[in-house]
Length: 90
Image 1 (cartoon, rainbow, N blue to C red):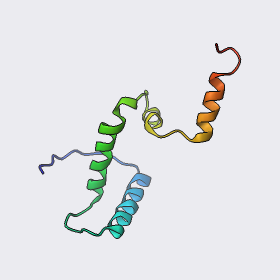
Image 2: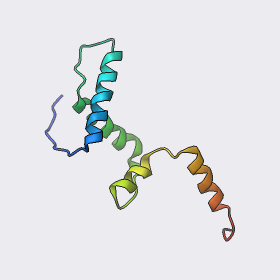
Image 3: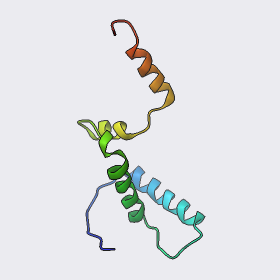
């Protein structure tokens, strides 16, 4: 596989969570023929966004974009549905 370099700036919490996830994934592995790194997980996340959620991506800010692809919490979804059926809506 040929890989190209792309710089990305990540927040401190993202870096620590990514490292923790990498350690967790590596601890559960049976087949260790391929090295799993932080970059491996970043490539998986990019593929997940491009192949699974790109059609849902909406917004003007990073926060908007993130919320557009994250699964909605059940409570928030119920409130949103109730608001759509409330007064003034036909």
